Image 1 (cartoon, each protein chain N blue to C red):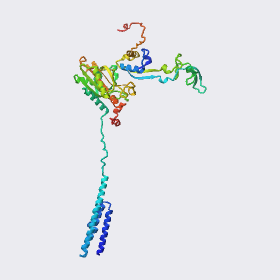
Image 2 (spheres, one colour):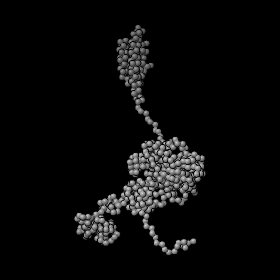
Image 3 (cartoon, helix red, strand yellow):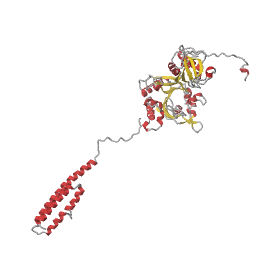
Image 4 (cartoon, each protein chain N blue to C red):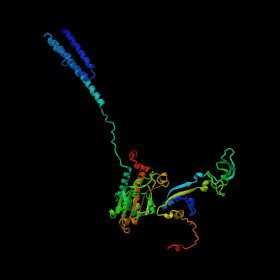
Length: 165
Length: 345
């Protein structure tokens, strides 16, 4: 089972490095077969704020933009996206449009990167085939408490027992 | 003919003969000259016969000269024959000589297949602990290969094996050597120490670490009061014998339907010694076999009372062990029949 650590962290605090965590889980019986790091090669891609968009003076299908990426001067960036894409739509090819509160200048790896553990969950541990189940395993290893997801349900309607014999 | 003239002729004959002999290239030519001069129709013989035509008072003188010439010719022949004979012998010795100092040609020798060699070594090591070799069938029935080993037909645990079936209902190619445990328990009364090497079959995509045909060795020990500690002790000895006394070992929790508890048995990486390297995925450990305490259901399948008898079992892939011993990184080599690979063992 593939376990993104960012998601696992929702249910239990993890103070170990991915390698340390993998080792502890393996020794517990949850064999970690691989560790994937996503985003390591996105460190040079940063969040920018689009300030202006114009059609490129010398190329039909290109746009010329100015983008703020931090405290310095805004950058002139040539871009293959059309003005419409940049201005309005939320699904655009090749352009990732972020939430308005995305921190300017932050590396994309920091925002969207993750580490994924490939855990070989054996057939006798169906309870560990979910993030919460693995969080419980991590808790067994580290002692950190599990933050159980909210499972409040509103009950109503006919009792099920009245619906069948 | 005048006596003087005769004398002169004889003298010339003698000179000619000696010159011819000296010029003779080989024994065959010399023999021909021999006949030409001294044979029945030879020159000298003709002269000798002609003595009868001479006046009687001249005959002794001529006879003496002729005999002198004949002696000289005969002597020259003997001498030349000796020289040519020696030369011929030398020539033959030179051309027919055998250099007895050249190294011999090594006759080709076969060698054991690394799988056979490794399986034999495994048997030898466990043999020292009283384990006896048994063989089970390669075509098994579903009962013995799965159900009697606590693997029900529709249980998720079945997914651990991709089975090859044969065209006889209820029969398959064994996916592991574990069925042998059932057979041994029916064949022998405890105490049992059995080793079961054998060829196994799985429906796998073939790559560097998977084959459709491969070899396993199963081990089984059953006695009254057998413990997990006994298992660890035995496996530690095996690891020391196979990989060296300097390598640490460990158990980690595992899962097999036919053992409870189940363990994976790891040895410190044979490549990096535990430091961490690509061969061990940077963990420093290599799993060499799975094992565990025989599940009560399996003991019952074997007709034994789990309250009275306990046991442990282990199973290892022979290719895996051989890979680690011989630094082979692709188990497909074992079945390719490539002499360039096999000759190295």
